[in-house]
Structures are given as structure tokens and as C-alpha cells.
Length: 257
Image (cartoon, rainbow, N blue to C red):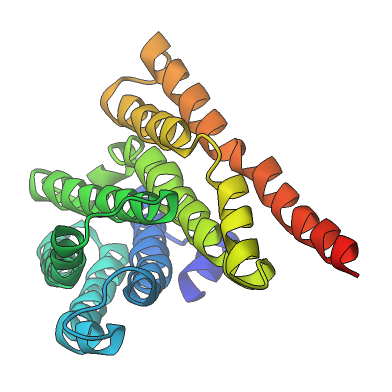
């Protein structure tokens, strides 16, 4: 919040100072606020550890929290000047290491019980894009002489984080949660799941293929434009399905009464 207010009021000093503060603000929000919340929540939706999610969190989530705390001063230090590259690199490397440890229960669960539903596959794909984005961010920073040089090189990671990670994770979570909330029993749960999972292999493929095109192809070329269409249609098609699911539940309740 402090960095946001600083950016809104104008950063005193050079253009590099503003760019560094903007980078620190973005990293704190994406890796800290959003990233930790999503990874922690997914332990309750996907990873069950040895017996239940609390065991997975105590073993894998524990190292992630201090690692992320190390990334925060690293990102904030970027606002102090370009000579703080080493601090930022150490913080981001610590976050990447913590995320790697945290992913172990997800991989173990996927190997023991391969994902086969729309929700589980979208949640898994979202986590994969988040890991790819963190690794790419670390690689870009490692080969950049100054922290502020990241400012012009992270544009291709935005689709991976926004569409591949955030929106796809949200869609997967809602695909899992809406039937549980509005289903009102096993039959209703299956009925609403059938609505939300309509043509889901095609939709999930479109989203992830679109994000892959956006990440790997330069903006303005036809593959990049195709990527926006694929990702937009794949994610946007969930909106009418999500609106139809509670309506179907309401109509069924009226029929029963």
C-alpha cells in the first residue's frame, strides 16, 4: 500500500527510481498478496499431503512463507537504487526455492491421483503457469545488469500471470465450488458440474494454447493475436455457464416445491 501511494503521488528522483518502485510494487502484489493466497488455498482444493491439507502446508508451505518474506525486502530494495540488484536477486531466488518446495505435494498428489476433471486440470495448469512466470522472472533478473532493466522485459509474463495463472485458477476454483454451494445434494452437484464442465477439454486447451502463443510470440504478429482470441474465448465462455448453473439450481428447487 505504501508503494502504491508513493507511485500515485509521484516518486521523487530519476525515472529509474520510479521504474524501480513500480517493479517492487508489482512483485509484492503478484508474488506476495496474490501468489501466497492462491498457493495456500490450493492446498485445500488439490494437495492432500500424507493425510490432509494441514500436513502438506506444515511441511511445504512453511518454507514458502519466510522465502516470500525474503523476496519482499528484495523487491523493496529495488526502489533504493539500481545497485541493490543482489538483494532483489536473493529475495526472488528465495521465493522460487520456497515455491519449488511447496509444489512437491501437488506433484505427489497428481502422480497418485492424476487430475481428470475440469477443475483439477485448470488448477494444475494455473500453478504451472505461475511457476513458469517465477522462473522466467528470476532468469531475466539474473542476466540483467540492473534491476530497473526488468521494467521493459516482463511484458510477456503478463499473459502467463493474468490469464494462465490468475483467471484460470479462478475459473477452476469456481468450477469446483459452485456445484458444492448450489448443488444441494449429489444429484444437483453432478447436474451443475455437467453444466460448468460443458466442452471443458476444448476450453482448457484454448486457454493454455492461447497463453503459450502470447508468451512465446512477439506482440502484433498473427500468432499473438490468435493467442488473445483463444485465451479470451476459453475463459470468457465460462461466464454464461457460471450464470446458468445457479439458475438451473433455482429452477429445480421451484419444480420440487
